[in-house]
Image (cartoon, rainbow, N blue to C red; front, side, top):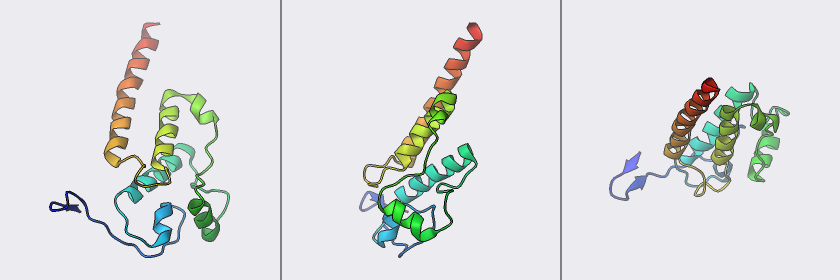
Length: 132
């Protein structure tokens, strides 16, 4: 929720959390903001692109929690960067969504801008290929 007086989004606290779709800062039980959702957006992109859970190699929430707190991100097969412009763009966007420090993480508005630009640039690439 936007705070008109403070000129920013209101902070909130989820309490301690478990689950592998959480942002690292959620495990610290401190005040949070909308950037936890940006981290989860990166997880959603990962799932749509790969068809896998972000930490697909384990069902152990405690292990995943430790990996996230330690700054680990899900494995992304490097071949995704080579498959297409769209895949490369999504990999780059996921990594921006998974930046450990929420203050340095991309905002959802910036993520939308990345996607809009990717659609434009992909259309230009398609047009160049059609002319060849």
